[in-house]
Amino acid sequence: MKENKWLLIVLAIVIGIVLSCAIVPLGGFALLIAAASGSAESGPLPPRSWQEQVVSGSGTDRLVIIEVTGMIGATESGFLNDQTSHQELLAQIRQATNDPLVRAIVLRVESPGGGVVASNEIYEALKAFQQKGKSLVVSMGGVAASGGYYVSAGADKIYANPDTLTGSLGVILMLVQYDEAFEKLGLEQVVYKSGKFKDIGSPARDATPEEQKILQEYVDQAYQGFVDVIVEGRGLPRDKVLELADGRIYSGKQALERDLVDEMGNLDDAIQGAREMTGLSEVLVVRYRRSTSLENLLRSYLVQSQRPADPFGVRELVLEQTPRLEYRMVP
Image (tube, rainbow, N blue to C red; front, top):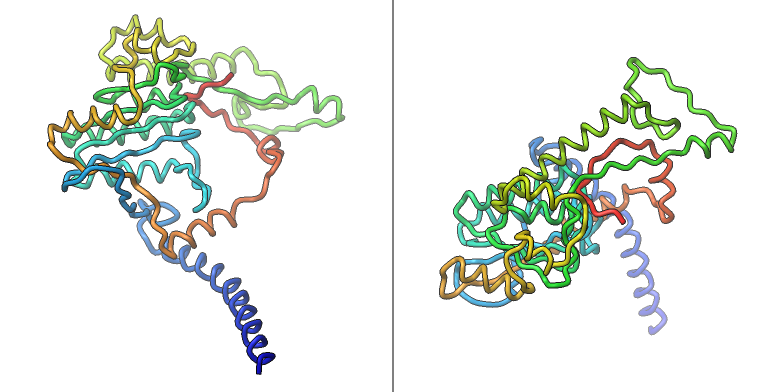
């Protein structure tokens, strides 16, 4: 009798494993079908609805803490990863914008920056939030540099720790060049192109003076956009911003002395400042968290399963590179 019991247990485990292996890929396939039948605006996967996690306080009106962590512009990397992807971050801001109960965002920035376009999209989404008559307060963590400062610049108030690493105001474009390595290995890249600038930024040869001028103009245009954001957001004279935005880093204390931030303080101080800004006697402080629904588990499985393994970063190095502007602090 006991032998039959154990046999049934083992059989149930085997059946469970087989069903799991069969159902999860089917679930991912079902998500793809659902996405394909949706609107083009929703992207390759349908948008998430974010759940509220209560931090403190009470009442009906909300103050939402939204975190900008790591590289700005990061892609979705799975359910177990703590970093919020670019699209997820935008979805959180839009949810707060469209929720009539949300009165303020405290943006916790812990980032060295990232892509120029991604930083601008976050900045514009936050402006749309403020245009609804809602308040935006920034709390800078250990690092809030370059694009991390860009997304903060339009806030109603910026708090920084005295030792926060901020600044690095500017733009960078980096290209890997391996023409000498090709020569040593006896390799050569043969290119057929329709115009002389079609392979601009090629890693297999030196850039021509004309190409250097084109790429520098590209960088300069983005730089002027960064300066515009600081002038508008901080209300500083353009000449002063140009003086400050030479790529150097500042501590939080130095940034305060240069009017790049408003007050010294940590996250709790920023929350209290936002609470006072709303003028409410009571407010519920919340964070947005991923839903633990089966759909989101399957979504994350699908994202992870489609990403090729690259433990040493070799794939990233050998793939064809595209010139990419970044508001990013680079040592």
